Structures are given as C-alpha cells and as structure tokens.
Image (spheres, one colour):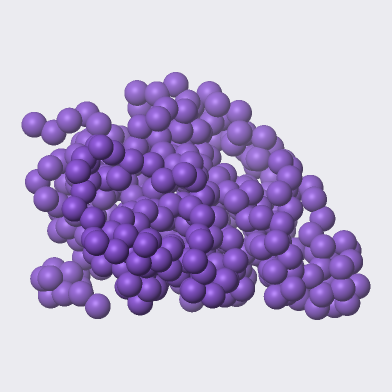
Length: 233
Length: 193
C-alpha cells in the first residue's frame, strides 16, 4: 500500500508536469516573441516544480522509481493530475484562462503548504513566488483581452466558460475555493467578463480518470523514452 | 571574493562548520602526519568552490549570488551544499559540475554536491558589492524592497529612473526586459524574487 503523503506529492507533481508539458507546446508558436519567452519560462518553472515533487514521490514510494520513470513510464490511468491542466491549449485565451485558474490555485495551496517544516513544505516555499508571478501574468492577459476588442473579449469569455467546470476538481477535500474566488472574480470583473455559473463539475483525475486529451499528450511526451529505453543525452 | 587560491588562512564560507556528516565530533580520526599541509588543501578547496562563477551571470560567483550555502572539507573529502534560485533553473546542473571540477582541481577528493531548498533563495541573498557588479555589467540589480512592482528600476547605463518594462520574462527565469526612456537603451533586470 502507498501512503497518503505519497499520493499527495504524486498528485501535485503530476499537476505541475502536465501543466508544464502543455505550456511547452507553445514554444515557437506564441502570438509574439516576448510571450514565447514568457510561456517557455513558465513551463520551465513548472517543470522544475514537477522534478522536485516527482523525485520526492519516488523516494516516498520506495520502489526505486525516479522522476524520469514516473514521468515517462506510467500510463494514462496512473497519472493523478486534475483534468484542468491536461485540457488542450486551445487558443491563447484558453491557455491564459487555464493558467489563471491553475496558477491562482497553486499559489494558495503552496502558501498553505509552506507553513510547515516538512520537505513538501520546503518545495512549496520555494515554488510559491514562481506561481504568484504566473498567476499575475495570466491575470494581466485576462484583463487585456477581456477589456480589449470585441473579438478578444468574445474569445476570452468563451475560454473562461470552457475551463470553469474543471476548476471544481482543484478543491476536492479542501476549503480553498472561497479564497480562490476572492482572487479570480475581481480579475474577471476588471476584464469585463462574466463569472460563469457553477454547474457541471467533471472529476476523477485524482483517481486516474482523465479526458481523452491526456492520452494524446502522453503519447507525444513519452514516445522517445519508450522507443529507446534507457536513452540518455 | 575571487582571491588567488594560495591564501594561507581561510575562513568558513557562510557559517561555522557543523558536525561532520560521517560521525560524532569525538570520533577518533586517523589524520595524516602533516596536518598543516592538509589544512592548506582544505582551504584551497573552499576558495576554489566559492570562486565558481554562475554560468548565466558570469560577473558573479555562486557565493556572491547566494547559491552557495556550505562547503565542508575534511581530509580532502568535500561536501558542498547549494540552493537553486528557481526550482527549474537549468544552470544548476552546470554549477554542480563546475563545483566538482573546481574542488578536484584544488586537491579535493570524493566531491559531493547536495541541493537544499531551505531557507529558500531570494534576491536578498545578493549583497551590495554583487549588486554593483551586476549594474556595471549592464544588468539592473533587484531592488530588495518588499513591494517590488511599485519600485522604479534604474537604468544601469545612464542611471535614469525613467524606465519601462518591455517584457515580464527574459533570457533566463530570473530576468525581465526593460528599456530606458532617457538614453533609449534596452537592458535586463534581475527580477525581485
């Protein structure tokens, strides 16, 4: 049997890893050069967090699996990330909506976790300033696009509407949604965007139930390692 | 900070040396006959490790940047503890390998590099002298205040506070792009973190 701490660290590591991989898909595709650099840097931050967490998860598990084995050699149903981070990037507005929702959640969670003295607390304390900057980045774009042209407003609203149902899963077993809303709602208001109604709340990521998007993402992410076992460079 | 490697007296890098990792302080040690020669090697190793340069900000050593936390040398056996600026900083791998090379070149054996996250690195670890070096190299140093977003970043070329951010992220995780509206020069800013 695996421990609850292992499950928690693995889940947070998978959140960061899948979010990093999605963000890295923007490399050389972002709407402007500066944003390309920004998204690559955010992806790198998230990958760094994933490496620290998955290395720790491997040690907790005690079966000799390292960060690479956990990232590259698990199947879809073994991933414990929330479904929000695995969703396709969509257009730039969807990516920013995902980052606003996920980054704000990560920042609140890491702030809470950092209060302790454990190794998880140390990783969280290290990551918390990074995620504050990510959430700030997404908030600026949300306002810029929401309060921009008719077209950018329409697409930003559609993006928020699209990801909103997936935000409920972030707060299963926690009471952070109130504090999260207190940060996200003012951004939507400043952007002139409607706060979507709460309704459908897809779930299952923490138990290995995922959308079809994750399988396609993993197929690409893991293909090299699976085709050439033990390959290094 | 980049003293020659021949210094005879060397102080501990950051803090007094804690207990050795291998056992209690009073454990009997089979030291070499010439203890002073051994001490000289230990001092050289410490200096060499402290003088390793950051691969991205070449004007600073890892000690000046605050990435180096501790160097333990005992009978040539070396344990170095470092901390990352950002969790995803790719320079960390280069720094680790440079530490091993530097320690070995100075006579160290069995070099081990440990990574700690606590206490977390912040830009407050960069001292005044190091900030001046950054400025001289054309990189605006971090402000060091608790409200970084409201502070003006001073142009490292002409000193004007009349500057504007071009992009929130730059060539590395720790930098942002700015430009000076007086001398018109673009420059990098080591972000407050």
